[in-house]
Image (cartoon, rainbow, N blue to C red; front, top):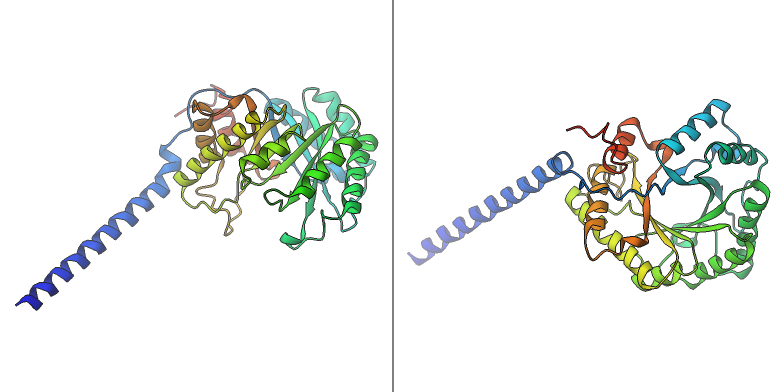
Length: 330
């Protein structure tokens, strides 16, 4: 009799567990598909007209027409892009730019300086370290010195307003990256901007120390592995607060740019249902509305990237970030 009761109890527990699991999975699935459509970014306007945008290397190589130049100038002005990060390709093992400083770069930079006087044209320089199967060893003083020289050359020879180092992957407390920033600062002409595109995994102390060496930190807040929209929005909120407060607490003049995803790649790191512009803006605006966030350290947002941002995403950007009432429809 006791054995029979135990079997019945065990069966009931099993059924209850299966039902609870099914309900939990159903709730997660419902949230996964409904969060993006039901949840809207906050209505408060935090736009300062100081936004960024990453752009490809075709401009640097001169593979653009006069029509392309006019269109990109119109976009930069219309979307209030104050910092345009134009890709200059990458650094080789010796610390040299693979493609140098082509004269073709001067043409588009001169044009944009005339047509977009409120936009700084920044040389976005990529470098990949051994921990990402790359060949750039920042531990080498010779490599760092050469990289700093190359950065200065882009400003002096091409006319960029500054540079942005995108070294991947820069781990927490890496002293060699800080040494690169110091060298770059002393190599650049006075008044040049120094920016760093950085990962989302740094601790507050390292964020603060890097902020004391740069004019701008652009956090690459994507490829986070977050596969639930609510999870990504919450993580984005925490991320913005952590980076903004670390910069402010160190008393740096540096400002924070928040990189947001506008690409459709499906990878182990990026889940587009969760990591997309609208969900990112939910997290960003929740952070900036939080009284604990020192938002005086935040400049704006930077879509990654121009070549992946479609008309619908620009509409989302205008509607929820620029707060353009003409696009703010239900």
